[in-house]
Length: 216
Image (cartoon, rainbow, N blue to C red; front, top):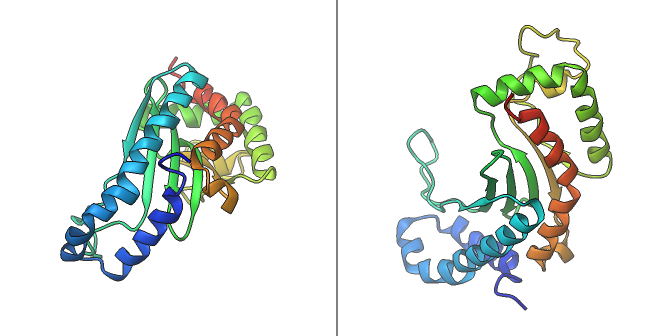
C-alpha cells in the first residue's frame, strides 16, 4: 500500500471534523493530523501522478496543492478553512490542467481549463464557431455520452457577434471547459491508479482542446 491509498477516506474524515469545528483554534490544535493524513499524502500523490503525466504527455507539469486557508477578502462566509482537497497539474506548454478534487460531495478527476485568459478566450470562440469546432463538439458529446460530465456554462447568452441559435451555442457560452470523471468507491481506494486511468480516458479531449487553444 502506498502512502496515499487512504487519502480520500482520511481527508473526508478530517474535513467532516473541520466542518463541525471550523475555527483557527481547532485547526491549530489539529494541524499535525492534517499534515499527516491529508497534506503529506496529497504531496506524495502530486509527485507520483505528475511524473506519470510527464511520461505520458511528454511535457512538463506544474503541480499545485491548493491551500486549506480560504480567501476571505470578498466572502460573506468568514469560516477560515476549506473543507475540500484540490490538486492540480498544469501543462506548462498549453496551460491545460489535470485536476483532482476530494470532498464529502464529490471525488472527481478533471481535464481542461477552469478559465481562459483573454487571448485563449478569443481563440476558443473563433475556433469553436468555425467548421473545425463541429468536430470538437462531436468529441465532447461522445465523451459525455460515455459518462463524463461538464459544469454549466458561465454565460446565459451567446456572446456577439455569434447568433443565439449557433449550432455550438452551449460551447460559445463557456469561458472555460473541464470534463469531469467521478470516482467510484473502488477507484477512491487507489487514487493514483484511478487518476492514471481517468486521465488516459480524457486524453483525446485534452489533445483536441490543445489544438483549439494553440496560438497561431
